[in-house]
Image (cartoon, rainbow, N blue to C red; front, top):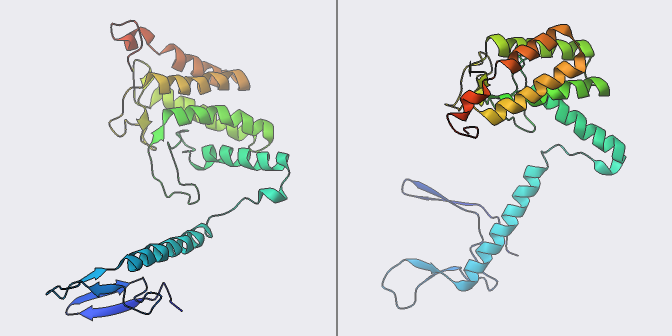
Length: 238
């Protein structure tokens, strides 16, 4: 019986070669044969040998994928009711805005690794930060975060964006550094991402009815110079 994953190590002068494929075909003949009437010692692949290599490669890939996916945490949906599954998915999505946020200034990373916390050290996104501001009230209503914690995070975020985060005429850069809120990755002043952030700001003011948040939100919103972003045209400059 042919072992398709026989590992051979052959030392030729100073080179070590590895072969993950079978060396014999079904008749027991070498799949690498010397070309007929050739004066060279170079061997060529037979048609059957090539087919066997593809088959072996396919089996190897299948085993590799099975091994790789065995390390991925699985949600056993079949053991959960529809409501429980939705709760788990929604709670996991909410946790992104807790685990990938800077609690001191409210900035939220643009992206992160699915299973390894801290594996992706991306810059913050002002759009993601706005989504976070909108997510905190949802977390309060679902019991995933206390109102005091959510309110404190929101206050610190709005204070940071009003007084520290890099901006021009009230518009923020698409990406900011997580700690200092400075322009990152040579990003643009983004009207669309600023608008997504402002949506979170205004929603926060409406939800908490907190005088401090309401005042901060008004100052951030009223600072935006919309005509300036027209850049002399009739539409916003993207």
